[in-house]
Length: 453
Ligand SMILES: Cc1ncc(COP(=O)(O)O)c(C=O)c1O
Image (cartoon, helix red, strand yellow):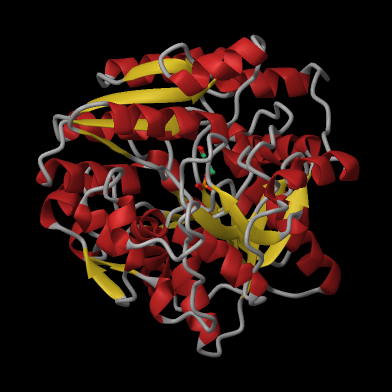
């Protein structure tokens, strides 16, 4: 019998994170201070993050030790299995081998606790009492609530309204772990009140929710901000996914031809792919595929430019693919992929042709998710379904070309609290959304005057 899943022992958990900044062919462009247009300095981030995380944000050290208390908590569910999708392969009649790294096994149901736990630890160690954050689909809010409960911190979460209404059980999970979750735009911040005054039915966006969380942070005592994606230190913490996967492929004695992840802000994709991109930079042949929705086509259609990370224009200007910080994507169910920007690290690697960007329509991703559920049994998050759609496309291509490819994707989260989306799909009530060119150009007007790259 062939191996169904590779399990590492607790002793084999990686003890260092991998920092891709040490190996990038093009050095990163610096974030800019929006007032001066000059490179932002570490101290500019001090109101938002503890020193330890700011150091990681700017670090070019290749390996960074994972603190013991973080490892201890990660061991609650890590290392996660690398699993083989035999039934899906059989259904597709493909000679390809399809593997997935199952990040849905964390207590919160996704990859997000990998960084939430690290961030909560570093804030606690710096004497911080409370964290404020935003959440799209609710996965990040759950992860941070969980992490804050582990390290005895208070947690306030601004949840994008469309997801708040679609996913009531996510709110309840956050509350169960002790977090306080409000719908964004909210009445709790000046920025939220202003947006609601202009548009009482505003469905919210990650950019707005980030703006609210930042305002909360800088106006509250003993509070820091925590971001679930986009920033360098978040990508760093997620690399434990790909580092484990590499050890697991070593156990099998094989190496993947294609590595796939869905991208919202870029963190599960980065976590899975950066260790493999390191090999690619050093000559290995491997395709790295990042998948986003056609409703929010940041890396497939947006320009690489300086832009704010939030709608309130409070963050430094980040060098990234962007659709403009005022962009509000259509309410697709993959709430975690509705972000106007992209991790600067992922963006630079796209520019350097180390990553292939790809976009799929909502219906195609649900079709893929349903097929995966009916073959492999796992009901995945709508975000994850984007990665599954790409894995299926790659496996079909391998079949048509008669190639025995090895494909791996990041199964970033389960969809057991996303069943409304599946219900809508099954009842024929879901539609595709592709961002119109005119709408995109309109949105990009907001960044016209910013420094060019
Ligand atoms: C299950 C899942 N996958 C993917 C994402 C996208 O985020 P990122 O690109 O940071 O991995 C999210 C975001 O909420 C998510 O919940």
